Amino acid sequence: MEKKTIIILPNWMGDFIMALPSILGVVAEGKALLMGPPSFYQLLAGCFPPQVYIPSGGKERISLMEGASALLKSPVDKALLLPNSFKSALMCLLGGVPRIWGLPTDGRGFLLYRKIPSPEESLHQAQIYRHIAEKAGLLQPWEGPSIFPSQDAKEKANTLWEKKELEGRQVIALHPFSSKEPRTWLPSRFRALIEKLSEEALVPMILGSPKEKEKAQTLIEGIKGPFLNLTSMEVGLGEMAALIEKTLLFIGNDSGPGHLAAALGIPTLTLHGPTSPHLTGPQGSQCQYLWKAFPCSPCRERFFKDCQPGQEERPPCLEAITLEEVWGEVIKVLEKSL
Image 1 (cartoon, rainbow, N blue to C red):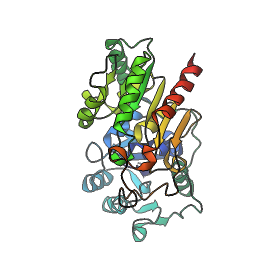
Image 2 (image 1 turned 45 degrees about the vertical axis):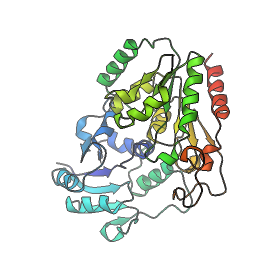
Image 3 (image 1 turned 45 degrees about the horizontal axis):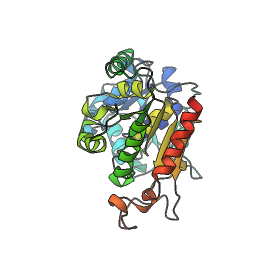
Image 4 (image 1 turned 90 degrees about the vertical axis):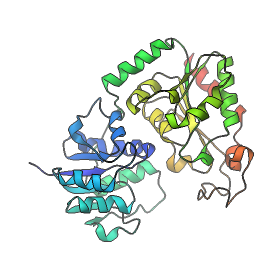
C-alpha cells in the first residue's frame, strides 16, 4: 500500500476552516489524509469519503494515545503538523511516523524531521497554514467551496426549516458565545439586537451548543417574534452549516461559527475586541467586522490584568462597539438583498 502524508488538524473549528483552502487539494489528489476531531468531518462529508479522515479522541479534541494508536494502523510515513503544540508532535512520534514536519514551536523542534521556518512577517492565520503546506511541498490549488455538508445533514436542516415555517423568511444567524467569555460582545446588547430584529420581522437563529442553552434562554426570554434556538437541540456541525447556508446574514464574535459562515459565502459581521480581524478574522468578499483597535489591541488576553473590566465584565474594547453600529451593518445587508 502506498504511503501517504497525514495532516494533523487544529483542534479549534475556526482554525480548521482557515486551513482548508491550503490542504484540500492534496487530499483530493489522494496524496494526504486528515486527522482531527471527529465532528469536523461533518463539514467535509458531502465531498470526501470517510477513508480520508481519521477521527481521533473525543468529540472536540485529539487524544494523545488514541491518536498515536490510530496512526500506528494508518498507511502514513510523513506527518504535517498544523497545530503548534508539543503534543501533536509527540503523538506522531508515538504513532510510528518516521518523518514529522512542522514549525519548531512549543519546544518540539528536536522531535521534527524537518523544521519549517516561521514566516518572516506577521500573517493572517490562514496564510500561516498556507505557508506551512507550501514549505512541506503539499500546497495544491483548491478553487471553490471548502465546506461540504452531507446530503443527510441538508435534509435534516430542510426538515427543521419547514417545521419552524421559515421558508420565505429573512433569517439572521447570531452567535453570541465564545470559548472565552471576555471575547464576547455584551449579552445585553445581543439581547437588544435580537429584540430589534424581531421588531423588524427578521428571524434570529441562535447558534451554540447545548452547554450554552441557559445563556441563550436569557437572551430570548420574552421575545415575541419567531426565532430558532439551536442551543436547545442536538445539532451537528454539518446540519449547522446547512442551516447557516439558508440565512441572510451572520453576526457573532471572533469564533468558529463566523469562519463557517464566511466559508459558506454568507455575509458575515464579526465583532472583535481583544483579537485582530487582520490576524484571525473570517476572510472573504462578504466579510465585514467592527473593531476599535485600541492601542493595546490585539492583547495578550490576560483579561482584567492588563485592563479594567467594563460593563458586564467585558473589556473596554468590546464595550466600545455599540448596538447602533451593528444595526447599521444589518441595514446595509438588508438593502443589498432587496
